[in-house]
Image (tube, rainbow, N blue to C red; front, side, top):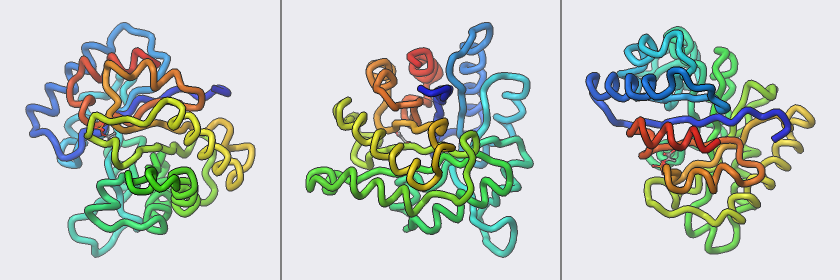
Amino acid sequence: RAGRRPLVAGNWKMNGLKADGLALTDAVLAGVRGGAWRCELLVCPPATLLSLVGDRLKGSPVRLGAQDCHHKPSGAHTGDLAAPMLADIGCRFVIVGHSERRADHGETDAEVKAKAEAAMAATLIPIVCVGETLAMRERGDALKVVAAQLAGSLPVGASADGLVVAYEPVWAIGTGRTPTTADIGAMHQALRAELKRHLGAESDRMRILYGGSVKSSNAAEILAIDGVDGALVGGASLKAEDFLTIARAC
Ligand code: PEP
């Protein structure tokens, strides 16, 4: 893995009231305590829980991340959150360009790139998500389309430690379906080649995660694929035991 420490990130999406968030955090922390973790652990709660969960995570090896940020550092953008605000409350990471945001909010590659650059300017590590639809895969266009998506979404000037890419096939998210291990491996190779074309040698140490229906039962197989440097986990991250089983599979 060329010195790339695996990252297992939980995307809680729009789930959880205060009590749920705290219970999940405490269960994760109880499982994490005392273990030596080969992978880096990250949870990305909804914005309403960031401070609460972040306070609980203090002093633990589990990092805090947000699910989105605005591309501007402040201003008249009702309802949005700026990257410096997220950094200010203890976030280290922020997911940008998740397919649900691309679909629900019409986010384009250019916007995702601007968000990733805003995140970096605020010393956050953006997790830039890319992935094909089922129609694209069935047409045989997946590699081409996703490489182009990455090229359009990549922030300028990213350092190896300052950027994470997540390959998340849209049709695999929340569906229980996953690509074959060969298809995941081929996509990760294509993405690394694309990263190298844009960012040069710096890209060798950048992590490329897989996301899309990763669960405790398939994590070991997926995380063993050459070029897979961790997982972005949605549904299964809402159960501490499943999340930690996935992390242990690194
Ligand atoms: C995600 O939304 O990032 C995701 C991978 O979801 P799930 O694990 O539920 O497929």
